[in-house]
Length: 293
Image 1 (cartoon, rainbow, N blue to C red):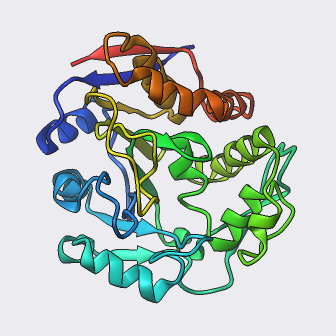
Image 2 (tube, rainbow, N blue to C red):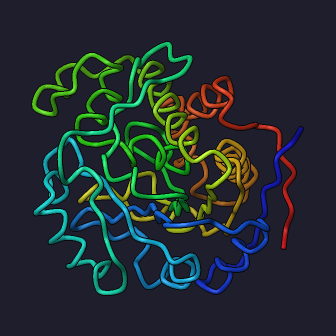
């Protein structure tokens, strides 16, 4: 059965609420609002003011996890300072989910690369989640969207190290000497994502914003400026379908002079394999119905 993906060409905070309402669900209990807080120096990440109406609507707490590389987000202290600097803590309660140890170790069901995922332990505090993604390129994954937010985004520093090394190490001090073959890394991302979807089951919603379409991620302190025109907002209860729909819209933008550059980043990293692997794990479906509103 195909999944429903809603699509709007209008990109405004108010339209984000409409796209959430189109899903016809109400997220129960304490809601985690997974965002990308943006590395210091990055110019492309979506600001808290943009997300504020929808986060307020669901009563969400902004959640993040620390990184496994140098920068302003690789320790809870520095990360909280950056969350304040970027304005997140001005508008929302914020929670760095792996600020305290131990991590939450979760078995990967049917995993071929990872035996377990390491999540920020505070994820246990939440009953449901809204995944708010800035869809764009990525230096390592080819693209970043809902599946990356579930995997790398919800993993602790140690969990990120396991994903990047395909299970070899959880030590962020040595992980970059043991990065995995590309497809194994992408499969590890899909497997990590599956542990979060399993945790929340049908109590999770996804919104992807296709704007500021750089080939680089919001984790890059020095990122390329956007190369493609803004495309729109997509929402779904299926993370595979919403990412696949975004990729299809990139391929459909044949008149955009930046398309070739974006596709070079996507295809050179075999980015589609994350979606393929996620579907194989049963996270969602690449078969979808696009409903424009």
